[in-house]
Image (cartoon, rainbow, N blue to C red; front, side):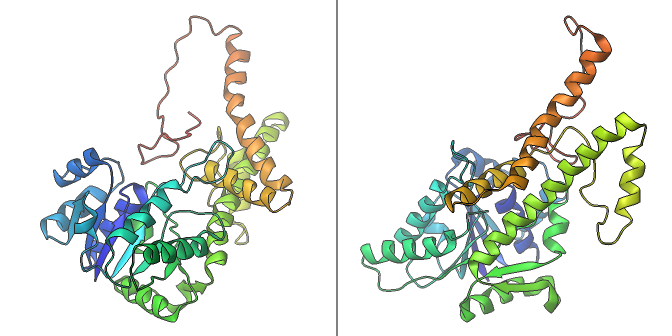
Length: 337
């Protein structure tokens, strides 16, 4: 099938490469001229293990293209995915300017009914708002067709995003339209998903699932950091504790590493966005606020240890080995280091 992906960040580029790898024809659209030029020269602007090889081979096989021209990107497509940034606004909520700008571009250039799928992490209710917005934009431009908008969240971990996409734990389709669901199933058919790994729910539930997953994972990190701080006081080893609790199948070993806190482009912004949503709906969220508070305080732990050890830090030289927020990535966004 012919797929257009708007946005060539981590999610957009990995999604495009993996869809192309299984045989779809994929065109990536981005407003960043410099980035598109680099991609057309075979240069990958981000580091993700395995990504460069897939992009290179798919580009050579002519089923992966990069353009800044919407007229080219939207010609004869079957489906469009939106993978644009939704970073935090100053007040904490998700900034949806890029999303609605992409919808404006779609309304200008689409010439037939097309399924639009949001992959960006967005506040609960955004998919429905996007559908209404696009319908009105198409109408104002004299177009007689309408487009469905679905939500298909990504669950990619930087550093192993290719594996996560090619062999997903689950795929979620947020849609109530049977035609849209069938098309999404066809798009993902080459990944040979088992039925129980394909979850279909209304868009609002899918949007909340994405936020809930990230916030829950972040909570494990903050809780482990609290445990680690206590272990140091009572001569216990947090690494032993990690193995001890991680061996419990009800808990599992993932996201139990203590350290200086979480960072990256997802957990911090998604916590802020969910907090803003809950406050907007007149709900308190003390547990979510505690995750954020613990994470903020954890960044000061290392500094306090250094100060206690050296007494004075003036004139000292320190080396930081690794500035990214996790291994196997070059992403330093909100990295605690």
